[in-house]
Length: 452
Ligand code: SAH
Ligand code: SF4
Ligand code: F3S
Image 1 (cartoon, helix red, strand yellow):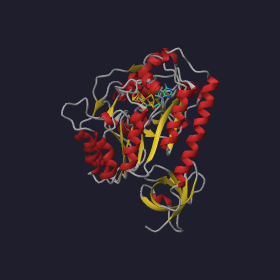
Image 2 (cartoon, protein in one colour):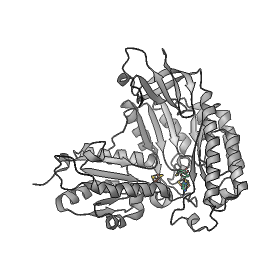
Image 3 (tube, protein in one colour):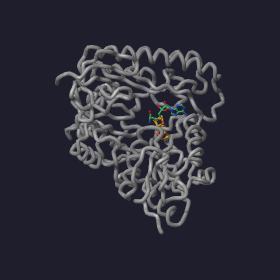
Image 4 (cartoon, helix red, strand yellow):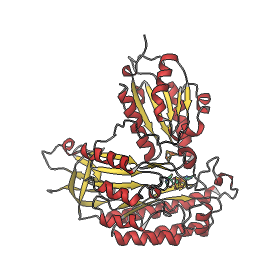
């Protein structure tokens, strides 16, 4: 008897950036629409979909290990299958395509970042005819526009406004696995935001590798600041966006932090290196001075703004002096949060063939010093919230104590707060409650829910 998708369970395992998280919601949306049942554990899943990331080698190696070991995991009792169906999607799927079928005989489906919509057909082929297949074609459309979406959280929505990247930073694999920049028509974006607001979503995060260059590829389309204004006008309570490239961040967008009430006082603005010489070899198209200039404008438009960033340590040719420039830039800016990465050569990128690698021990020592500074800054940033009463978007109970709620502040800090007697946390999930901050640590704030 033929096995149908509605007899099967699936889980989606997501790695990498917000773009993959969003894509996973589309994959779940499609599988749900076909009648399959979502589970959270691999052990309970008849179908496992890996949404993969290849931005750095360490993550990729771990992921390959996980895909390999999944061969030995038994199926749930009662599964109609004799073998779990394993699919690889996302950025490694796009990069390696069919090779993955040869490398992993227990994997039967590979799809890329442009071909999520092929997954249902490939699943049918596997179920009905035992076919193994891969699809990494790119028809240059917007890969997700027409696909259903199943949000991970009812209160938060990722709304992609563009995909791909045209920047070709010399270390980065993303332009090769996500393709060229493509903006979604503004009317699609606004319609999706309006639907989200109507369904009770409190926070929208606009997504793209480089949101500030929105519209450049569509003749006559408005620019990013207009997208912000239009989405703000939907009545959404909290609006955020990632990621911004310093070369494209306009004064109009900076001004939006002062003029749009829903735009939260937090911005992720990766600078990668504080050395002009390294920024040039990274092909970043801005200088240290231009970056500091943007930071000054942002602090004027939005005093107390929570700035976060990405930094790469040990890029080929990085001298002590270059690293000191990075360290000093962090000191000057004062970040709320910084993601620090050790440079990882990615095959096919220009930097991978640069020969002046930095000694590993030196890189590690620089990295550790930088992490120390970043943690001090996070601690200091959080201290400033002590005594304040802030709105917290409740995500659930904290892991340690079910009478303590966990949520996010406007500045994207994690907040833990004890709740009044007689209140059920489940009833607060997805709402914004006032919390008085009593304690501040490096990674979170803690406080008490107070009367609004
Ligand atoms: N589009 C975003 C995010 C790109 S990937 C942006 O432009 O900011 C996220 C971060 O990974 C980058 O900001 C960079 O700091 C880091 N990264 C990318 N490639 C890397 C590599 N080869 N080695 C180490 N870190 C890398
Ligand atoms: Fe990668 Fe640079 Fe594009 Fe960001 S802007 S995705 S770092 S190439
Ligand atoms: Fe990774 Fe792909 Fe995002 S390589 S960082 S999941 S765009």
